[in-house]
Length: 478
Image: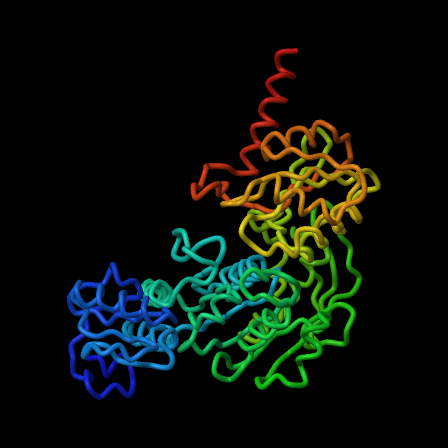
């Protein structure tokens, strides 16, 4: 493939044959086009020299580096994303793609949309936190929204496998780093905007602005947005793409009434653009009503009628790691991925509404991430749970007790501290009584603890299964 087919407007090298596009100088090979993302001139020079030494035919950099094989560009990240799309034959243009962004709800909403479409005979691929899923296979995704090379190769593979629809999570990092440039989404979804990732974005306004910058004609044809979110409702008068709204408390195109939540699922009546549908779903809690409304709105836009919408959503299975409930000798243990202030608030208020007994919570905060949310989550935990146990959650390169002390900065009442997560869970379950709910928050279905640069095998589900089996074994011996 000639360079002019990958990147527009490059006259000097337009007829150079390119065999691949890459973003890691160490992995550059003969015939590659290398894109350097460094905004430091010295680092950019070093990386481009390595790429050229490894055989790269041309390099793109933000700087004029005085090398005849380096092209200066104002938009190396965007150029890379568009080059990847072109390299893989613009498979993205031949798929119907739904992109979901928001602080919380991305994974569940993408899963629900995918399941609704599959139940109605569509061939679907999913890309996000839970991995890449299509054609009966699942494999890991390196990031919630992967880099453009991985992403467009995945689109190509999906298209070749017969996939028609792709439902993918779109993170704020991916928007900011232009990983999704060159993709025109058929539908974009905005679930909510609350605090997260301030280690990267520094301020909430910067984070929110990045999320909202996704909603332009450059990125999508149509938007589905939650009007109950204050940040989103303030944005709507300025939205430059056609949009539909969903919500519970605000007049919307899609809304829910007669909501009833239980430990076994949720019932409500949905009005989807004047189609009235009785919904009975295994998803638990009011926040999952929001996720369901978003999914109903998207599938309506994609052409499903009311009967198909009901078929798709009713009795859908819960998403792994999202309010998964285990009955442990009459105690209800809930595993949930909630790792932001809003996410923790949602899961705890849901638990509180589902029992007249006690609510316990076991949680921690990730190391080397947004520190500002730690004290806030501590306050939310003690305000909404009867018993709080603070523990590890991917401490990374921070000391575990330093993180816990920052969480405690928002707390005034007595609580438990047990850094070892497995021990913390077991102790908390033992403290609870029949009818109590124990929320284990922060990791969901993750299969590791990240400690000092090492991913140590660990899973909250495994701890609970082991506890159940141990209790069963003790009963059999008694």
